[in-house]
Amino acid sequence: GIQVEQSPPDLILQEGANSTLRCNFSDSVNNLQWFHQNPWGQLINLFYIPSGTKQNGRLSATTVATERYSLLYISSSQTTDSGVYFCAVGSGNTPLVFGKGTRLSVIA
Amino acid sequence: DTGVSQDPRHKITKRGQNVTFRCDPISEHNRLYWYRQTLGQGPEFLTYFQNEAQLEKSRLLSDRFSAERPKGSFSTLEIQRTEQGDSAMYLCASSLARGHLVQYEQYFGPGTRLTVT
Image 1: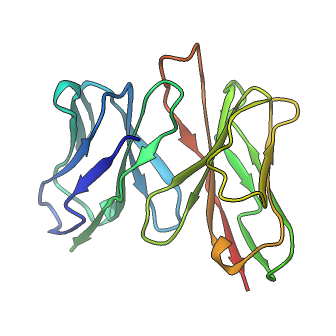
Image 2: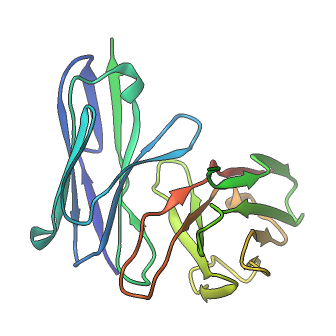
C-alpha cells in the first residue's frame, strides 16, 4: 500500500517565524489533504490539494504529484497554530492513508 | 450547513461490554468512512460505505468490530466484548463520490473517545 512520510516529526517555533512541513508519498494519488488536529482531537481541513498550489491566509500548500511530495507553509506563526499537522493521501477507492504527523509548538 | 457529527463524544466502558457509536455525515455526502486513532499516531482506516453498501471491510480490526449504514444516511460502529486495547479515538468522515476514479475531499467529525477499563 501507499506509504506516507512526514517531516519533521516535531517542530518548535517562536511566534512570528515561518515554517515548512513536508509530506512524501510512495505512489501516485488523486487525493491529498492537509489537516490540523486541535487539542480536542478534531481534524480541521486545511487543503485538498492533489496537485498545484493553494493559499489560505497565512497558510499555503504545494503538491508536486510527479515527484510525490507536498509542502505546507505556515507564515508568521501564532500560538493558535500549535497542534499536529497531518498529511493524508488516497487514490480511487483506496482509503486515505495518513502520515504520523508533525507536532508543532509555537511559543510566545 | 452542518458538519459531520458523532455521538457520544466520550464513552467509558468496562472490558467485555459492547459499545455502539453513531455518525451522521454531511447530508449530501454519499460516502462515509470510519477510522481509529491511537495516541501519537495518525488515523487508521477501518471501513467505508457508499450509500448503504459497505465497500471495504477487510481493515476492520477483528470480527468484534462491525458497522452498518442501513438507509444510506447515518452509520453505526459496534464493538463487541471490548478489550483494553480498543481504547482509542474513533473518527467518522464523509465525502462525495462520483464514479470510482476520483477521490473527493473528506470531512471529519469530532470523534468518539473510547476508554475501556
